Amino acid sequence: MKEETVCVVARLRAAPGMGDALAALLVEQAAVVRAGEPGCIAYRVHRSPLDPDAFLFYEAYVDEAALDAHRASPDLARFRQRRERDGLVAGAVDVEIFRPLTD
View 1 (cartoon, rainbow, N blue to C red):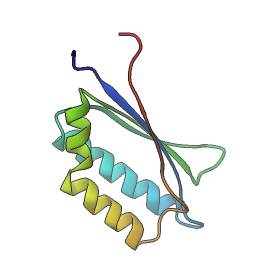
View 2 (view 1 turned 120 degrees about the horizontal axis):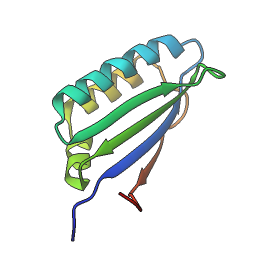
View 3 (view 1 turned 180 degrees about the vertical axis):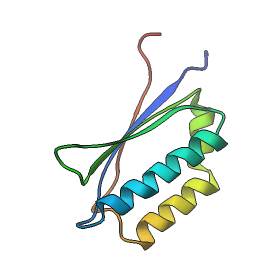
């Protein structure tokens, strides 16, 4: 079986009044992931201009093993702990996994 890229799209919403704090944490996390995870080929964080509490991640990994390494990363665990401890997110994070149909 050929290894193929795996893409992740995640959506989350800032808790009321926490949009800028969440944005800062997400930007920090993106830099850590890009610098420390060689299997990550894209990690982009987006913020809606119409709803500044709405955020979207687009992530791409070289293969399933690279995504698994990301999920197991101590940096990701620390990010999630800070996000929860500081009450930055309202509700659950919506995560979807996609696999390419074309090159």
